Length: 333
Ligand code: HEM
Ligand code: MG
Image 1 (cartoon, helix red, strand yellow):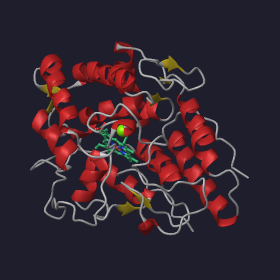
Image 2: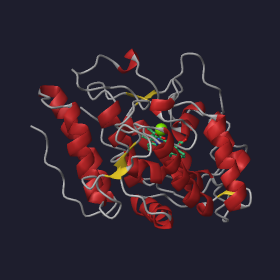
Image 3: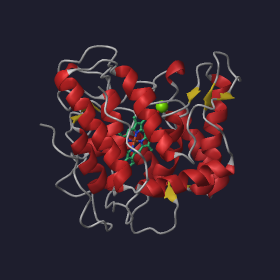
């Protein structure tokens, strides 16, 4: 039987997390890493298994312990990822590319491709990874990072902060509109892209530092090397669903862009009115279940259907813990 998701930390204060029992070890040739610098860091420090094949529960536990992600948000991301990128039969997910190490796949159209899989979670207009249509969607890209550096110099006095994030999030969208004919910026990417622009501020500023300013060498350490700085303290405030939605609002209000896509040519961005907006978090939850998860499992049966519905319960539990007031999408049959 599937284990229930871990509960919240009992002590959410800042603390040293780059400890001797979790040393940085660069990934070996058989260790999998992917598009998420947060999870890559947790793997490089052994907060999740270093080979990069994990359970969603291990992800929840580690993002709470290492970065003080709130229990609601941790569940939401971990089970969302597992539902689209993981193996529901073995309860394993790769934090990078597809691998037989997650066990025998359920039947197509299930993908079980790990976090590198484009569209279902990973998406366009990332900060330090290029759009799938244009190249490698999971490896650190120095040219993109230099753009973040120049925005931080221009808008943040040499730091990454909300003043920078407001401008950089908008610029990344403009850049993808202009360069990527296949640019796709609807659910779930619309939500994840805006969230991730806040992550460096909420998760990577040392928990003893109240300025809201992230030093660029610390940003590089996480984005590129996926390594905690020496002496790093995790944040002193859990980042819950409501907290991230507050951060998203700040970015969105600076330059409102609706969810949408290019239509196969560059510079053709059109808003898709069927894709939920940030004002409708329950629509994001329900749309993800109905339009992203369901098509991967059109006729699951037996143990697969069971695992699917259990993981959908775990996803929904995130919205309950976060007091989001959502109605659960009915179980699949
Ligand atoms: C990006 C998964 C937690 C930091 C991503 C991406 C995935 C992902 C699939 C790629 C999206 C894209 O850019 O196209 C997850 C899951 C998590 C999680 C399943 C489970 C809780 C975290 C945490 C942090 C973090 C705790 C920070 C400590 C980031 C950042 C990006 C990102 C900054 C954007 C990278 C970029 O745009 O270059 N994550 N993540 N993530 N993640 Fe995570
Ligand atoms: Mg991406």
